[in-house]
Amino acid sequence: MNHEPDELYTLRNLFWLGNFQQAISEATGMKKCPSNLLSEKSEYMYRSYLALGQYDVITSEINNDSVLSLQGIKVLAQVLSGNIDKDVGIIQLQDWLNADSISTSIPTTLQLILSILYSMEGGSGGANLSEAIKMIHSGNTMEHLALLVQLYIRLDRLDYAKTHVSKMKNIDEDCALTMMSLAAVHLSTLPSTKAQEAGYIYEELGDKYGSSALLLNCQAVSKMHQQMFNEAEQLLIDALSKSPNDPETLANLIVVGQHLQKDNEITKRYLNQLKKVAPNHVLSNQLAVFEGAYDRVGATLQV
Image (cartoon, rainbow, N blue to C red; front, side, top):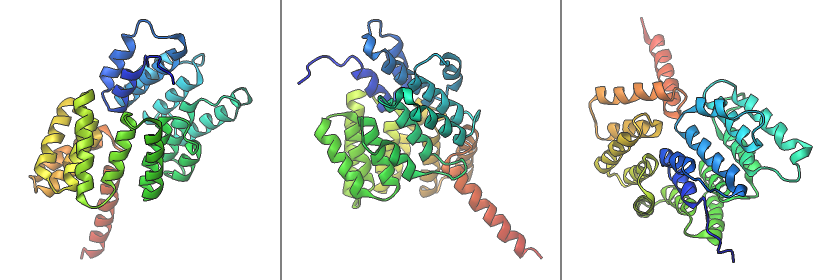
């Protein structure tokens, strides 16, 4: 059994649990990182910039001489910033993965990023969850397994999701990703007592590693599953104070506002903010489709 200290333990957990600015500070403050972990440290740092929407930092600092895993992060940043189409990014990553020079040692981060791209809406065919799963089906890392859990939940295959959570437990039951994946399965399972268990997990992770907009949103969703909308709203307001332009917080506030019958002006304000910071968010897209259909029906009724 390996008893060597994990130099990136704190960095990984900060990133996984949504404390992205702290993750950047942790990475930049590491003065004596072992040479074999330098690339991984940089990956988590730039992925934190990615999560914060600071795409210009990534595109300006990662170049063609950087390792492929970092170049993959740059491609994802270019897609998210709208500089290149999702399909173009997929082709580039597939070319790298198929290159003879790396065929014997495929960077797991490239597989992860390609899976993320396939799972995103947009592009010629929308989200392609089967291809997303295919890219990481072997579950080479804990992040691969955690993403597989999310993908199977989206496909409403809780049996497969639970199987992969069991694999994660066998590897490291106390890993933050294992706990987050277990909580995600709980939220997708009836009855509401499972949602309560999920809330306890998120609360425990926040107490242990520090609260974040991500964890507060997860707690809020568990409250919504239990019809506790006032408590959910307070958690989301706390999340908004940590990350004022977080799309998921704004989307969840819109949903909670509807359940609490909030003033339409408040909901409209959150919706306008969501459309500005994340014009392609699933909630914005769904509302646009609904509004378009409503307008078309209305036009047919005009005299």
